[in-house]
Amino acid sequence: MKAMLVAFVAIAVIAVGSNLILGEAGFSSQDRATGAAVRLDN
Image (cartoon, rainbow, N blue to C red; front, side, top):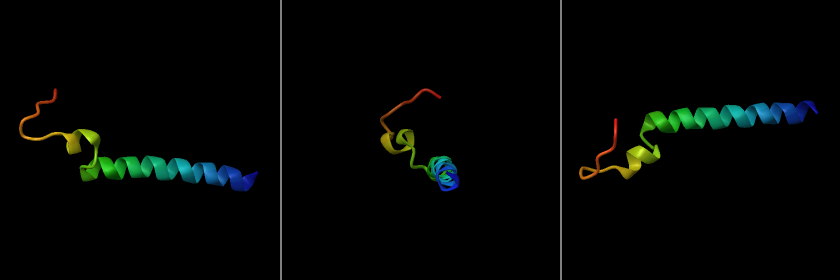
């Protein structure tokens, strides 16, 4: 049971950490899909 809880915590930490890192690195879908001819609301 303890190993399963540790695994759940590790999954949550990896998911949140990767979301923050990729968002700051410019790999969000908004950053990747926009170009000079695309206007998005700010």
